[in-house]
Length: 334
Ligand code: AVJ
Image (cartoon, rainbow, N blue to C red):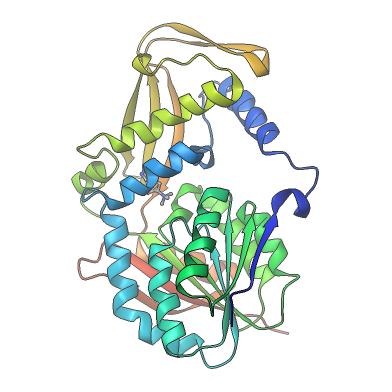
């Protein structure tokens, strides 16, 4: 049997939504703030995605290898927990899909009946994954949705009545602030049925020097990844940012448990952004906040689950206890 492949294009899901307009609006609003900021989701254009892929292979960025270890160690247990009946394996933001391939291969090996549905804002990643799976696992049923998570999750509502298992790996959740995390989780709960599973990756709190190294790698890839946001504004919005006039700075906030990324202006300068018909002034050492990467306490993870309608089935952790993939089940009382 050959694979069933769909690309549900964002434009078809929501015809009035325009990526470029959204980027323009967010940049305009963000750079007008007293504390300038740009949402981290704009990192992932083609260049940014390629740099992110390099980060995940860098030894300083421990997160990926920890999660690979977890999935490899517990893939059989996960197959047994979710695989009794046909189900939808739904992944939010698969990236290159290396981690999930471990599960997919196990599930295929165990002859489980499932459809693998991918949701990503990056079409690059989806197209590569479709081509790869089509070649290597033609028996796999695959659906790819090119949209942001929230719209993708809404689409889940219109899919089958089968049990769902939602994967949200890589500590992507760490980019949300705490209030948004709870809204996101409750929204997810709303889209799911009692007994559905979610498997969420959380990066745990740990020695601060390990965190600093992960977000400031020795080869400067993370720096380039951050600066690419300026280049993306140059390319797509007609901005005139100069890379040598900004530096990348990472800080860890002990109180909130977040690594925070900033682009810092090295001098007084005025930036023009043509398509916004606007200029933005920077004072020396004024920053743009570009990313939160939250690190979690286990008590915090438990609190997220219980306050948003889930029960924790099991926390799967790596041998160093750096990272957890937390398996939750949806609780609904009628
Ligand atoms: C993809 C959001 C999990 O925050 O660790 C990697 C992105 N930023 N290095 C993270 C990222 C800088 C990453 N997430």
